[in-house]
Length: 427
Image (cartoon, one colour):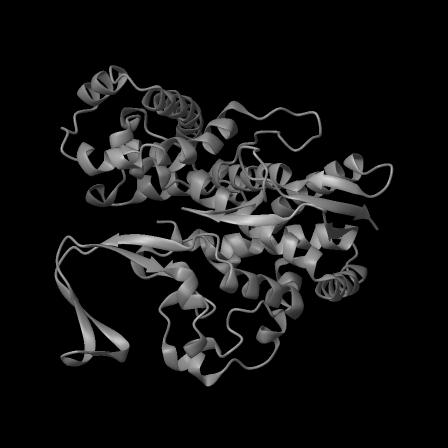
């Protein structure tokens, strides 16, 4: 139902929206450094930007959080707390699948568990559910007014959920999503507000589309700060492209024809994928062939049998940085890599990923449906920020913490949450 909206003809319509949101962040940074260059804690603003991009692009709403004095919207704040809250109770997932799936009983039991962490998850999910229901009911009412209003929304490049609901209405009855499933894609289903069943509600547009974009953009800006020659070269390309635009906004076609911008994005997502690994459960026994045989005491092994029910981890970063595939410098960040033909070994490896011969956005039927949407977000935001500001490293040493997502932090700091201080200078 959603594949058509991520095709090129529809992605073009998102560009003006992305420009408007990126311009908001640009104005925020201009105000923060009005008296000259200074150190700015960027990760919070990048996170707000990412949430606003996906809120407007996927849900057709705004949290109005991109202004220096704005507080965090209740929905956005709950979204940020969701992953840490569920991760702290990860061990419960080993036993809670044994519980009955009846919503009322689950909630009754969850509310009586003597754990502040469980009650915190319930509060977070209730907040997300409240706003998810509000958005859903607004879309449902709009759907009742006819497709003309939906077409108008889509023509402005926003509201993926509206398209989903419209296509769902026209689908065969056996193929339709339930209202609960649609609400779950917006934010959270209230009946799942128990630690036992948070996995389903985590696979939403807001969660999957904002956190990963925030991490990717943070990484790119830090790499540009640490590599001023790359930053200068990218800025020159962007300035040259902007001078030929009458309205000062790049179109989808212009963004697609900037080779160095494309190379910076591709190389960053190759070497530093926001998600380092994914987990999969084998639904039936299968022999997985190896790209090269492994020598064992019993002789060469060319395949590994994985029994049904086996939990596996796919290490995306290891595949992306394989020296066997990408060459001896595979672990180095070199945007120029994508400005010339790639090694023959890259094509011969037949990496099944959907993006640029990498596994960054996974592969197959469970790959990221919005990878082109995400890449377009990155390019539009970088086009604004790199052209308007110079980014330099701060005195603090930045380290990256690896978990479900990689997040930046200041080495030796006791501060809670991601941190990315950087010196920003207006050009």
